[in-house]
Amino acid sequence: MNKKLKKLSIWVAVGLLGIVGAGAAFAGHAHHDPARKLAWAEGALTRHLDLDESQKQKLGKLKERALAAYQNHHADRSSRRELVERLVVDERLDRATVESLIQDHRTRFDQELPPILDALEEFHASLSAEQKQEAVALIRKFQRR
Image 1: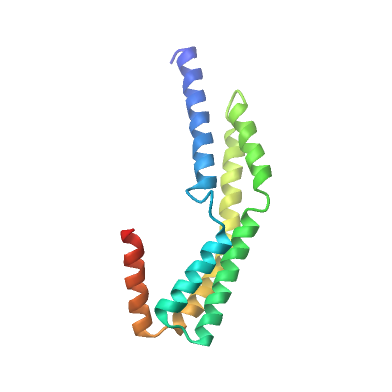
Image 2: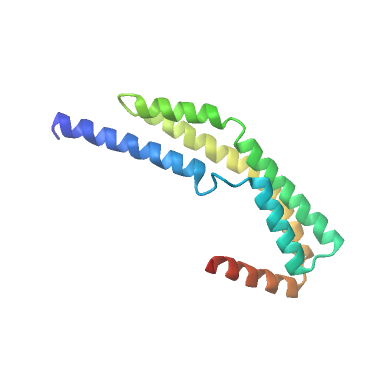
C-alpha cells in the first residue's frame, strides 16, 4: 500500500474510533437522566404488574443498584474522554491503550453486574406466574415502539 493511502486509512480508522466512542458515550441518551428513566420504569412496572409492598422494595433495590452502577461507571468519564481525544489526534493509534480501555470497561462491567443480577433474581422470584406473563406483554409492547 502506498504511503498516502496508508496514512488516509489510519485517519479514517481514527475518525471512526472517535465517532464510535462518541456514539457509545451518548447512544441516544444525551437528554435523558438515568435516575428519571429508572424511576419511570419502576413506576410503570409497579402499576402494570400490581406489585405488593415486598415486590416494590425488591424492585427499588434493583433500581438503586442499577443507578449506582451507572454513576460508578460514569464517574471518571471526562478522563476517559480526554484519553480518547488524545488517541484520535495522535499520528498513530496506540493499540495497547485502546485494548487497555476495552479491558477496563470489561472489568468494570464484570464488577458491577453481579449485584444487579442478584437484585434482579430476587425480584423475579417474587413475581407470580401472572405477573411474569404481564411483564412479557410489556416487553413486547415496548419492543414494538
